[in-house]
Length: 165
Image (cartoon, rainbow, N blue to C red; front, top):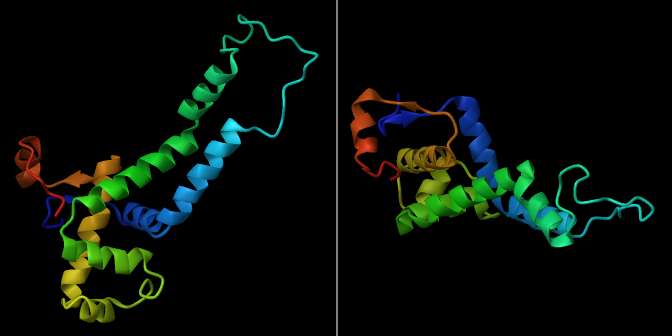
C-alpha cells in the first residue's frame, strides 16, 4: 500500500501513464472527432422521409449534432481524461510541474532515466519517482478509475483533506 493512502493496480497505472504521455495526441484526436461528428461525410438519403416519431430521435440538425456530441463515449472519455490530467497538473507546485513536464511532454527529456531527470531538476531520483507516482495516482483518482483506499486515510478523504500532492 502506498504512503499516500490510496493505490491503483499496476495495469491501471500503466494505462493512466500512457494517457499522460499521449496528452497532446489525445487533444488532437478530440478536435478531429468533434469535427467528424459535426461534419459527417455520409449524408442521409433524401428519398427517405424521417418523421419526428420515427426512431424517437430528434430531427433538427442542431439537436442531432448536440445529441451525437453528448452521447459519443470515446469523445466523452477522452475529454474526461484530458480534463483530469490538466486539473491535477494545474494544482501542482511549480517544481513538481517542471518534473512532470520534462518527464511526459518535453521531447528532449521524455525518455530520460530518472537519475538524469533528477539531476536536471536538482532532485534525487527517488523524489522524481515519487512525484511521478503521485501524479499518475492523482489523475487516476480524479478520473474515477478503480483504486484501493488505505483504512487509515479514509477519514482524511471524507473530511476533504487534499491527498494529491
